[in-house]
Image 1 (cartoon, rainbow, N blue to C red):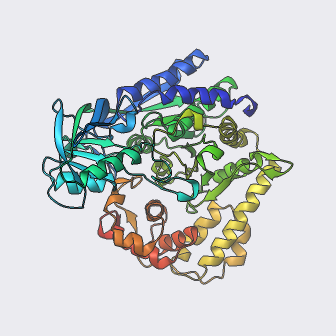
Image 2: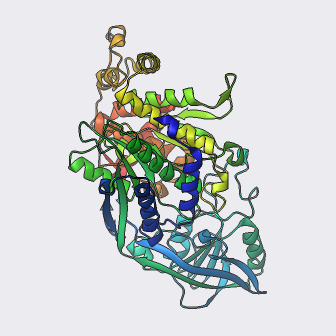
Image 3: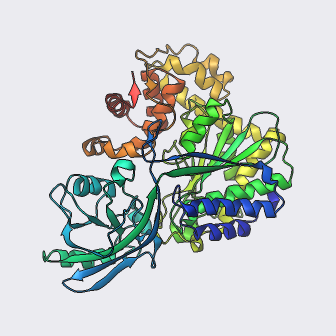
Length: 565
């Protein structure tokens, strides 16, 4: 089956999708979704096996911990320096990401004094020039300071080791977002993203105190819907589903993030259909979080959650061009491990090599938050995530199809397809390697938690998840202790991302850990395990961090109402 996966075909779909400005709830998002449906139908895929789910894009609906945005799309925007001299800065004709997602519209041509952002203050009626986090700038300069316009130069996830910094990429425009829930959108703030080169020009003029910018912006902000496309890849009706997820949204070009995942999932659907694969496999193309969370909760309510999922997010990067590494995010140990380990072993066996020497970079990392696998992981479904990070051109107008690698796409896609093959033709020798990996990891965990608070809550669960009954006798007399306190989520599904903005900077500096991933890990663990000490202990072991740091994070989450104890 897997021999029919052709990276060239996947890359051609990425090229097609990259032309769409795929903002969640927008016309371009819907058209890109229908373009993929048309592609499959023209290959002979049955049209009755598509289903579109819709969820509110109204800026007020809250699903779990995640607040909906409005539907947003840009029409046109341009920005000029007007005083002390006229200089063109940027426009949507140059790059679509020059307008920050969530930007409002201007009243025709507007002129605003240009002020340098200096934290909280009075910016009434001004355009504020800032190189800080857009959400923080929005709160300080607009909500509290009355600014009319934001001119932003900011880069998420800078990695100087691979040349990802503003100074290394002065001509790159970063894709940025300001809040556009209903309350935030009513402020109608105009917002631009500019290159480091243009930011420096504006900064030099702004320092004189008499600079001004002119701009004209038209955007569409309205109530709409977030569409999730579910593709029944096999039409097989018996047994539980396996689900492959990928988010279709993101600004143009958004080739690796995430036209690559959507395109690869679509091509996998075609192959499974052509080969009449005898197992139920569905594909879900979603708006990231805002579609996957309500979709996952709907499946749970209807008792249709899958057996496991595979999430494809940023799966096509050319490692040489982007400086990226192919990664697999592990399934948390409080969930069954078999299918995550099968996927990992397939990735390693298919790793491109010459005479046994690897030609590509691959790494397995602890459970990582930030994508749609979290919507299912926190509902108790094993959901490994494949992607590429760090990436030199992540969230920018340089994330183009030219940065994609056909061989990389084949590597990722074949790893997923070969994992599916184990559903129908289990290979005893292959599964022996999987079993050995699980037993080795289980031994490490049981050895580490033995005799500690919460270990008794975990013992039977871990032996089941790692299929490690052979170790029971060895660790049966470990004097394991129960948890002393209960722990449960305050809501269903993932924490999402917006809460991260409320996490205090002093705690970030003090803890020095991947607090966002550990927090989602704890939410899922609380739902499965139910004991605070047990979940904190397992998080400490999984991430190899001091348990005191996990306890501080858990305590903060309880105080903020994200957990109950």
